[in-house]
Length: 386
Ligand SMILES: *Cc1c(COP(=O)(O)O)cnc(C)c1O
Figure 1: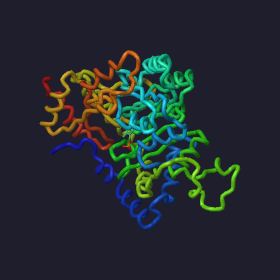
Figure 2 (figure 1 turned 30 degrees about the vertical axis):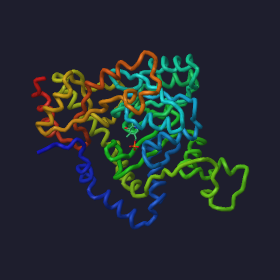
Figure 3 (figure 1 turned 90 degrees about the vertical axis):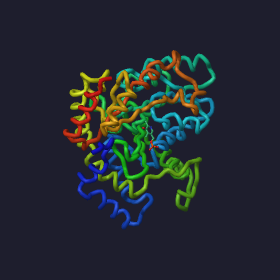
Figure 4 (figure 1 turned 135 degrees about the vertical axis):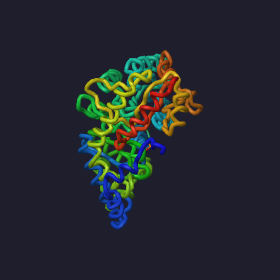
């Protein structure tokens, strides 16, 4: 019997028909775009994320692009991003003719290293070609980035801070969400993410009233919003008064209906994932080079359970032969990808990123991973002679 890497059908069955009923109600309701479930989900998401505003959008990539558009990021601007992340984190920067600057990560959390960030900003300023504008910190594999330190760097240099929580949504530092430090948190509801829907979806969360309004405008083709109608009247649907260049980035009603049900159990699922991770850590520590390390006081949502091994590829082959799927996130960091190798890198290069890319391997992880299956996975790792 082969083991799933992520078992979303087990989650669906655990929810006992609630998702199917919600989808059916959304289909029958007929408001398939921007239906009432979208507003209901946004309200619940804002409560969960302790944000003043939550706005749905089409996917986690658009969620990153929306604040860049609202802030007018463009040619000559630098946006600091980790290289050890999914392509979307950097991809949206050249959309607007700005340049991503790749920053190294911390060897324990795999998240942006605040000192490497400081060095990268200093080098970009010294060179004088680009203007530092934004930092995008990623909560990789579900662990929060070091927001207190990163925010201090941003404040010193007057930079905006985005938390790309596509993987990490729900993670906390000392009980606080990344939004306590970031100007905006973005997330993805791609099915495999910890809070996933049944297709594509995304959202932004922010406490900034004006930013929320601008993003609400931009996600609907730059429609007029309250800030725009302060000093002007328009007697028609404000959708048909276009104040800025926007795009079409909406969360579907059906996906919002799925997410309303999934969000209700999300907090509990983060606890379930933490129990799975603690059990993995305990059992695997003697057998691998490194088990994940979450700093005291932080909570990961365990989007991935990622270990390090000196002979990573042989371990992957050994596990595959025993019916245990694994994945490598990420085999080629962005600064070494053909599409991105021309963009600037932080001063001193990215030695940590270039070392860990050959060592990391992710094991099956989801809230419904039962102990018997987990024991099989652990036994398979332990049986690898390496
Ligand atoms: C998945 C992901 C995204 C993009 O989300 P999509 O919904 O697939 O567009 C952005 N950043 C990170 C770190 C991700 O893992």
